[in-house]
Amino acid sequence: MDVDTRLLRYFRAVAEEGNLTRAAARLYISQPALTKQIRQLEDQLGASLFERSRSGMALTGPGHALARAVPAVLDAWDRAERAVRAAEAEASKVLRIGFLASAANEKTQDVIAGFRTRRPDWRVEMRQASWGAPAAALVSGEVEAAFMRLPFPGQEDCRLLPLLTEPRCVAMAANHPLAHHGTLCIDDLLDEPFIAAPGATGAFRDHWIAAEARGGRPVRIGAVTEHPDDWLSAIANGDGIALAPDSAARYYARPDIVYREVTGITPSTVALAWPKAASPTPALADFITAAREATGA
Image 1: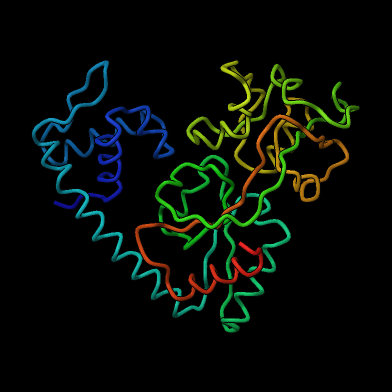
Image 2 (image 1 turned 120 degrees about the vertical axis):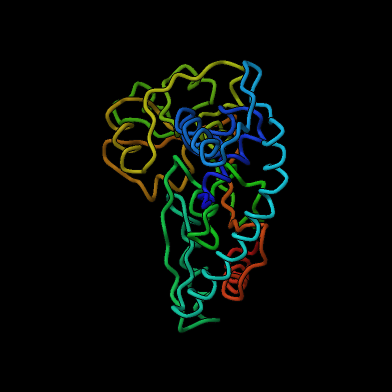
């Protein structure tokens, strides 16, 4: 019997979370889709793996047996996949690095230049992630490391090298009633509709809707976006305001959007992230060293 490793990863997430909703959020998929995948795995194995109840998902006897076996299976496959990707990278001399939005701002090119001094015959291929699944390529191994904004889903499984910290500001339509203010307090914004990342991103979304400063007050969501262009359009159209790093005013300047200083919220940190599960390849180790030197981290 051949079983897709994806189904085993879905099973492991549900087994560890004991809850379909939390597991679906962790996996960046919908709950109905996850339910369908678990049933597909049960059909293939010919066994019921979970007892479903209002309180959650409890493992059955066969479920416990599979839960004990799955980590070794997935770890072995992950090692094989990483070995293949490392060999492919070495042969093609391409290091794939993920990033969100403006990556490490102006330091990005300094990091790449530092890497090239160590490996002049190599190329860095940058792959942009969506805000809907910011760490998906990192988790899947499509990229060896990524420039990420903290916090992000799955960061507990990554090694992190903080590179820079900058204040957060607020972006709003140029004709917004608050646009004439030079500086705003976060309390001035809490009743405004916010442009948000998808709910499945958890702490990442919470950070950018100022959940830590709300004191339990609910957020109004004006729109949900996953990509910078959609985000900018929603702001300019007046669907809501959005928190952003200060650098957004440089990287996403538009005549119909203004950026204003905000007090009362924590700053934003960019870190280079790579999986804990494996030691960095020699090429990635050089990239990490270049990032340290370029940013003084």
